[in-house]
Length: 445
Image (tube, rainbow, N blue to C red; front, side, top):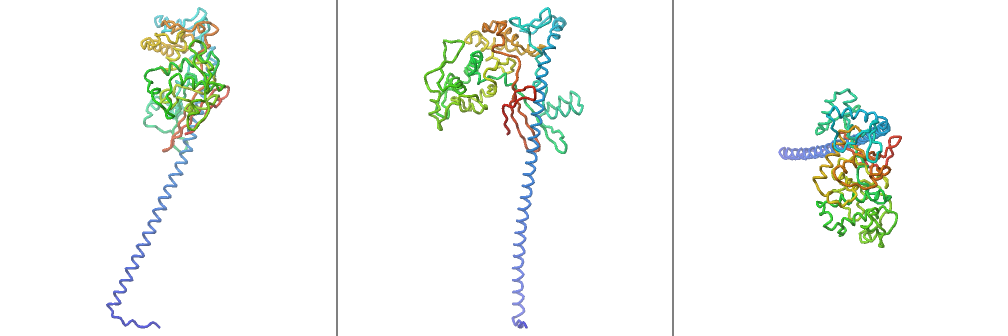
């Protein structure tokens, strides 16, 4: 039995109010804890959902990029078939060329090669002209919006508008989600082949002449006037020698031989690894072909400034004896091709900007208006027509294509897939063959 409370009523009421205040604090504290737990749970749920969405979009973007890359490889397969068929179509078009020229007033583009009475186009040395110079990767865009318009029966104006307005990044419908992909295909054979420095003399010389012409521009003096991160100041000639020593098969340092116009390099008496022994950490020249463009950074004299200036004009994936494709749109590479073809690479005329601009304009015009594209014979004919003496061996019928070619077999494909906020890029280098091409390089970003 509980003892009766003999305290005054006022005291008892005050105690009851105190107990009710403690209960309120406990309730508020509990609510605050539950609110914090709920907010944290909600935040974690949103984060997990967003991460799941990113993983999902990343997978979608990856496969969209692969889809674009596979379409580009399929297009290059068609290019091979087109090159094979063009040899049969070229004589027929050559027969029609004089008639078309008569309709246009009998004029031919500068540097054009006249057709023979039999209808077969001929070039320097009497060799047959090339096939059709159609380059599908330059005229057929590989883009999700363009392909979607084609498959849906869109008009040419709609297709052109979809391809033109890329600032909005329009998305296409892929089943239950929206996304897009775009592909850029570039011709590796039109770039300067660094591996050619270790090739046969017929290919070593033009690669050397191209690189020397590329580096000699005075606007690039700042690259060679300052020390690099290894406190090494490297001249232009040193870079050429270092590139050659990196890919050749011996460990002897090379030197330039100015007295031999056909073989620019000679075996020296020093160690090609002398410069790398001073670096931290030390390493040795590879004495083998490059595996990627990034490997160029290992070569003495190649740094960020060098690659920013010249990286897009170099290639390392061609065979060391591959020939130069003269169908390039890069003005600087055009100049290096002209220097490589000239009988005297030090001819002062090759430093005349007006003459070079005239030659390049004629070459570009010849590519645009000709049925057959720009052939090696057209290239040589344009140079001789403008007073540039070319190498004697290039004027011989059997050696016209010794340095140069007008076809390509190696391409760099950069495919970008987009889904949601995620963008994935795949870079592949393909040498196309009877199938969909042999993969030489693959990188995902």
